[in-house]
Image (cartoon, rainbow, N blue to C red; front, side, top):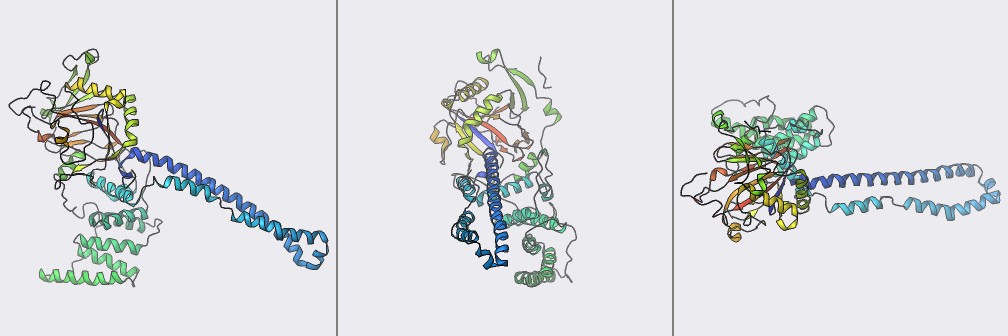
Length: 519
């Protein structure tokens, strides 16, 4: 089917996992931390070398003085009878021991500490660590991956080995627990316990893990298992006051429940180990979350054989646009209704690298509109970063801008130039609603990162150098709510895209209005 005969006012987005609690949201910025850490390791090695050199010098002094004092203490009077020995003793105590004192007081760590101080301002903070942990949990939910997969580094498309230790899993669980997210706290504390039982090295105590795990299991409504885990905790640490109190409370609560159900005897705890599907994830405020996540996993995509037969590929010259006549764009249908197309070779590698270079220093956390206040704000489920680039900044941006006009036939003069941080952003722009979206993919993604449309069950995957395009409004001017879309989290790799949101003002003669809601 798909064979051929032979930002800018761009919104540049980098997705993954900045300073001020946002480092975790951008691989583009975290790569800088990789090199920072490498520099610190080199500085640490230099410090160790200086300490070893200092220690060798002190050892040399100690060995020499040890020989001298052994000889002098055998016969002190006979030793001092020699005038040279008397002179050298005075000299050592007056001068050489002072030199040794100065040597010992030297601090080779100054260079390392200075280097640390310079870089510390760019270090992630506690909020960054928490954000990174929650990002892993989001991946876990979206792609239905158990904690074992993460802990063992068993992720699709992985090229680097990375494992989580017992203490790493414990910290993940504690992060969830402190957020009252008992669902994930159970999964990660259970994984810490599993690895601990396998006799992996750890610093955290088993009692601490069982403490968090038993209470989190109770919060998930599993009293029999909570009792069983708390009994294990009491067996390990009989003096654990809270564990004893919890055990009595859990047993009393379970007894009350059994009495209300007219059952006799305590319900035995299941021997099945806690796994991903043991407990149901609590509902949250995000609408259509289950549909969205299923599409991200490639499930529920409504691409039928009949629908696929209506998809074609063609050369596109932008209505005989002079700039596209000699080298038309390769256009492929991605979806029939609403019509979504993909353009091949929409960006060159050189253009991609230039756009990244311009955008990287100004990447900032992407925002969403609060459904209650209408104010743009950050959200835990949207951890991408964006930057806004104007056409005047660089010839590459202007060239890409012009190419989008040539391909779509729409003017980009009224497209979004800046990110507006107020509730009525579009009204302030004075350019009407978004009539169309032109999305450039600037990287391949090893796993995850699709753009999904929950209303009609489509998933569009990133392909470096390509672009996808669709209309957000019908010709009547009414919104095509089917084009509501969301980006799936990147499981492995990083995702760079540049968005061009084209507004309806100025398109009157380029895309004339119609009276009906047709594509």
